Length: 338
Length: 288
Image 1 (cartoon, chains in turn purple, orange):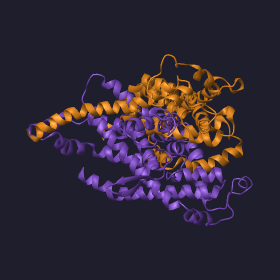
Image 2: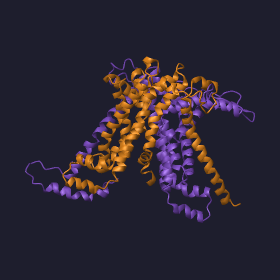
Image 3: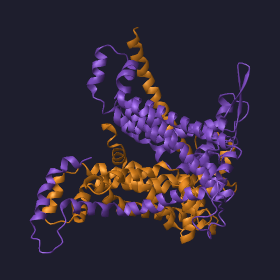
Image 4: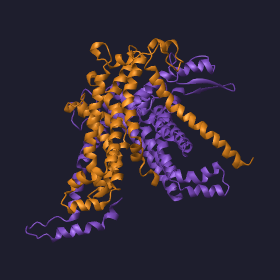
């Protein structure tokens, strides 16, 4: 925060306010009071929008989750009425809730880890200048800035068993017997040394998409941090005979750790709540029914506002518990190390 | 060969392989999109594995068909582009109007709750958009904003103001306070100081933030789906593309042309302002 540094310079103005002859009974405002008023006035527009479009809806969701509410009768309904816990019992006992939560976790952890690892590899590879680096750096951000709907559509076409290029090349060059329906295969049988293993193919494809789409985000932040590492550190390690892997493990990684931790939390939150990507790729079928898509289904297919709210609330609570655990255990640890 | 020598050599090669692979996985999907958009559908079905367009197949009919209004047998993307542009530009203007004073207050002024306010704004991103979707859906239906572009823009403002404040606050902190004092001595009020002194100085940050907001609003899908799905003449481009991609009537290559039309504005803006944007987003990351 910049306030402590600028504090002393404000003193003269405050004195000036006091020097004004006090003709009226009401004392003129002090500088601090005026600053307080201006500050409040300046944040008011933002606060109002956030209040109306974010905070009030969240509180209302909490209320709705405890009521019997369907879209048809919500118009005439009061804010409070028909209290019940039925939505929650319905959510917890409905078929597929626990598996959907598990799917969400696998998707989130996979997508977060994948995008971070690929982003880190990319940042390390593009660290030193070479001809065309600036252009490549910009180009690598394309998956992140391009519209989701457009890129999911491209993936869908490319992976299609009928006219997709991936299956065409797979059968032509890689010797696949049949085209593989990447986005609609819940479990793909693979023979591993005589064992039949079912691979959750659609889920893995969605995770791969997530990795591809969000690695630029991690790459951007990691590259910025890498370039701020003092060159002397690595130079010293090199003089002492450290190999590249050792320099990475003992010099660069500790420097990157705070950014990696922050990115993990950010990506985890974003992916956990993600709706668009899964909905657009698979519609939540074939073992990719993450909770966010289930909420949407409750809302639009069954018009069950109460159950949708309860489901969304459970998702938010699970996220908060996970974040709480993270900050209780890991954040303190990294702080001690740093 | 010592371990150090081996590793130096290995990573020397691995680095170029990695760079090549990264270039391929980021460029090829977009090339694929562009290539399919200038092909007739028969050419795609005949040879799905080809990565080129022969001169004989090359066509721009896909674009004509996707842009033409529905009344003339097209897909009406021109209309959707207009809708998207209206929503995105409106969001940018209003978001900046709210975020500039907000960011200034957070970075410069001490007021009641100034510590808590940025935490509150960032909490916006903690809740799933689907959690907001239910009540917003009902609220907008009540006040008659569902199915309107204005309602959509309001939601986008709430989603983008917090990150805009975050981006601009860091930049405002770099402007020397003495300049503002000079303005105050010359008789500027606080608001005048912001608009006459701080804003012109922070034009790069303003541009970067505006572009970022534009991209978010242009690309957004979930709320457009919730509010506008039932009124086709107000569809934004992402929504229109998704709605048509579900059916089988429209050839995939025509929709690829639609994807290109949807992607190009964002990519052009991004390249025009890449440096501004990446610095605006990551400023502070290198100090962590």
